[in-house]
Image (cartoon, rainbow, N blue to C red; front, top):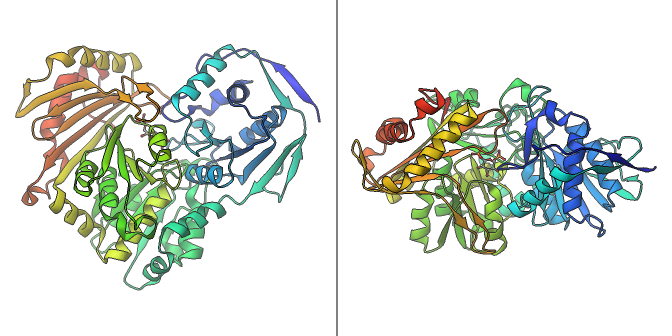
Length: 544
Ligand code: G16
């Protein structure tokens, strides 16, 4: 087998977003496009020191083809050993787990997360570092800078590796081991949760759950953990066969895209517990009977009750949430006397805090929750955590959450997304808001009084790195907030996200509909940002 140097020219659009490089499949299929980006990674990360690389993806369209290309480039760049998930499969949290368990120098994860899959849909490449977490901005910026000047890549000529075979295979000097994508992850879950108690609950006559894998990567993980280990009936596992196009659906576990599951749970005679995870298995949605748990509340409830779960019985060191995530967990941290950090959107910002032992749990409003067991958000972990809480407390999902509200007050929360709007209009809107920031404090809109307004900036307490322009934050008297930012994960136009929040201490007012409870905040956002003027939209596309 020979290593072939190939001449190439740079593409100018390979800057990773909130979570890796996400583009249409057609973009990745252009000659040299994927190769350039992968070579740029190897030019920045020293892969020649005899280390191990982890490789896998969420099984979406183009996953297998991309893996073959990456294996050949890895071999030509002197990677000693690659651990590849069988069939090219590794969920994002499982990849993080495997990187950590096997002391790999890093991993390449192929996924566009919750974005749809298929020849006309999305693909993505993400590089994770040796702690198992997404590469921090200084690394992704160096990869981007390299991609702007690259003039060649190295690739090994040879046959495809049999990703479904037993292995190991040699690709030139590189040893490719095919690993069971589920094994390491399952062992880790067994260490954290009370599997005996969970088995009792899931096989019991008075408990019914539904887990929806959305035809995405978590299907085999759910089959092993819920089915084989915990004895959940087959009927409780929905859409657990992964498909390259996710069955033509949008693998995003929210009220809109997991509607069938939501409808089943909102039947008064429905199951006790429902959950769904996304394309690459890191996001989660939690439902009780006739009850939706917002991701922000989920994080707060997990933090307040973590002592009930074996892996966290000794207490938690601290918590962190992304800036747009509601302040519900802040109140828990205050009561527990632990630190609470507010970070920019993006899981990578939790990495240093987790590595330094400053936090144990962290989460985001975008349906992400996790802990120090890996360095990614982890959908199945969150589902197991909730099941463990139900088993240990004997309470239902709605009881746990409403009890929580009674103790801490309810933080009403909603996110309004305006998807696929004109990029120039969206940027103009944010610029206008930014310019208006100094004039906002003291202003009243309807019954609301603005007490603070800024463009969120974050200084990492561990390495001092600074991230600026992370979203417009408008603080309201009484503890409410309106946050506005543009998504960093879309592949078409721009997506405006408006995050709305208010705090209600009075239990008599906790049962209100969140959209009604937040009506004043919704009106304030529309007026201050002139959303319709800039985007041409008079209503959001998705409300969660
Ligand atoms: C990614 C990041 C998350 C972030 C989310 C939303 O999630 O890992 O940290 O909260 O995107 O980002 P945005 O609001 O910029 O679209 P995932 O599940 O897409 O990898």
